[in-house]
Amino acid sequence: MLKISPQFVNAIVNAERLEELYPLLQNAIELEHATIPPYLTALFSFKPNTETAIRSIIHSIVIEEMLHMSIAANILNALGGKPDIANPNFVPEYPTHLPMGIGGSLIVPIEKFSRDLVKNVFMEIEEPEEPLDLKKTFAANEITTFKTIGEFYMALQAKINDIAPEILPGDPAKQVTSEFFPSDQLYPILTKEDAINAINIIIEQGEGTSTSPVDEEGEIAHYYRFQEIYVGKELVKDPTAPHGYSFSGPEIPFDESNVLPMFPNTKASMLPAGSQERRQVDLFNQSYSDLLYGLHRTFNGEPGYLNNTIGVMFDLRLICQKLAETPFPGVEGYTIGPSYEFVKVGAHSVTP
Image (tube, rainbow, N blue to C red):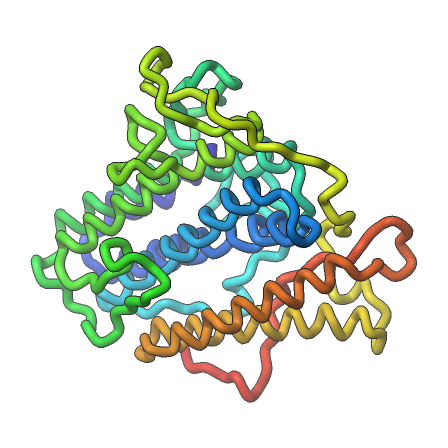
């Protein structure tokens, strides 16, 4: 499971002022973002028009991680803080531990899709505190030294309920909504109740509930969607199974030959200076940085700018797909992977 150092949960529990929650919500924004590049890379590593079922699952999870990042930023704004996204320190240097003192041996890479990656990394990231045993697919780790991301969010929820005023002090004009997300999931956080309900969305979409692998809307939580990919079967209702669900639905096929041989953890410095391949990686990093600058503007007073960032996301996908089909110079049998390196450009200077 995602094992967070208990100091972060303790910091929430001991907070006496809303201002003390600002860095913790910033950590949450960074964590939600940090999962997106690994998931996107696995998604982009498939050959075009293949592995439709797996693509659909991963794509849906990426969209919800973007939603969770947006919710966390809205809550930070609602409490009176300022999200800091256009910052080199915001971007993990993959392969890496995730933000917030992740414990254990979990290292998150940027690499091509494999079922082992899904089981050993993606499911580890999304694993709830007490995974439901659905036909005993495989055992959950029993580690109690660390806290989970669910516990972090529940502590945050309880603290907001305890110390925040009913009407939150942040500027309502900074709240971000978008047609890209359902209006009942990304909405203005104006009250204490709004914040509490929004945190429930993050917890349930990631982990499910304590008694079911689906959230209150009947959507399968991230952990169990990744488990579908690993098991190779859809999770469906099954009244004879524990918790009413089992991996007994239609097959989720996977043909390993449909995965491009993307070089793991590519860095721009690995490519020859001045080469076409290096320019492609530099272009990817520039677009990725443009996206972060755009999100910073969006969550710091220009909520309408979100539509511009969505356009950049599509550009990023096209550039990454081209990279994944380009042979890696000097490394036989590999193509180039995306590197997700922050590019600080004077023209993009942003005052956090």
